[in-house]
Length: 394
Image (cartoon, rainbow, N blue to C red):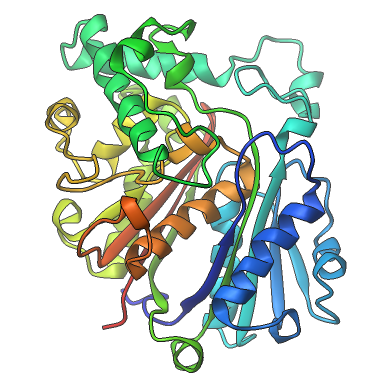
């Protein structure tokens, strides 16, 4: 299967600081991320032939992007796909270029979650569907805490051992985030601090959960032929895979409530498209969806980075740390950036883009040639997974 492999290239990317950006509005963040991308690509807004805007709670019509950036009379489309929104925005722009609909496209994701009052640990107060229900809706930390306890029981990990294991992921990501200038949280953290933090939903403490933040990121996509006119170190898209599901796994009697079927299917499709046979050895750097430490933990197995039931051994060995065999979340991930939904996927792509260009500074993974991003979205009834694989031109 060839798919989109090597048919589109990234020639520019931009990313704002993530955090509690009270002094900036959505327009400010869009301008900041997009103009960094324009400058990085060596183009101007007038060169954009089509654009996609990803936002979940932004309240922005797609057309607003045109007026904010003075794009002129070009088509602009708004995208929403919960936590996969940023990656899906990028995916739509890539397919348009690959199909020959346009030559140069813009994908931008933005979210100002702090302005909404959204607290992250609670059920979304903006969701009218949830507000209209009479029954109790289980909040995200509880859902992932249940998966953690089920994993610990299934593979014989005492709760305190399991909590310490996923706590090491928080320590790793905060160590990486301390090296990332645009992260919301830039302080290293000891395992003792993580384990003694206030409990949110056992075994998940405060530092097992990502924060709530504002941010924006953007990408300029074109064909490889055009990319050569702008720069030598453009980055190729090797695979795009997205899977949405509707309750099928949880309705099956044999569902284990540990792994995400959507992630397993999406990653297999992406690997086939990119020609990857052994992801642990062929993927050199990855950015995965660590909304909670347990999410990153089970994702190691779902993506084929760790054998099923053996992720603990890799965590203990430092496999996914900078300097390890396969560094994951080298910029600190959602743990250090927070999760402004529309921007997160593109922020992940920004990190992998910089890594493959050799421009990640003190976070640089030596010899990085293939990078992967992963997003997970949804609730027990309906999950989605988006996978992107980037690499150099052959």
